[in-house]
Length: 226
Image (cartoon, rainbow, N blue to C red; front, top):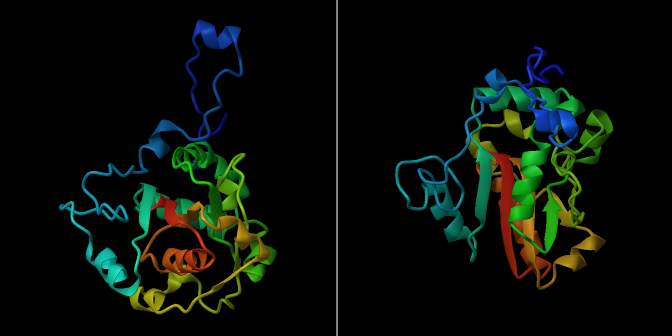
């Protein structure tokens, strides 16, 4: 099998047990060289609320600012740093629309989502225009066999992609979401918001605000990268 990222052949060392029970292990999708370019977050040297890498265990300035704006704190978990390798991955997967690349992180991300044991899983939705041009939601495509609820609708009319906005432009983004009829499912429940990348937190705080308005007991969030 070839690496999904560099297309080099992946050398697989099989044991006798693997030969006797083929299919026991899932096939590798990324070669070791490409895999090591992605840096996992260690959850030690980072903000306890949003996983922002830093040298202190105190809330980062961003989370302190969010605490002043909202009566609740959104606790976020991310798996990887948004470094050069992850940025290139997102460009190919998300912006170039290479759906095959979902297999690079889908199993790992799905396992992390399930470990958080939320009653309702709510993915961040894309706009209708994005769905029409890309053909898939990059967030839900990473969820293998996870039951999720479409509580939110993205009504934003995108003129400039979030990835192309400066920090202050992101923070000033108006509420892009509305609640759907499915939002009744969150009443009194622990809700997990799922996104692909956490940058400033603006998108997830917009989403969490509406989910709380719908009656959720608590809201947490997760993303592939931070």
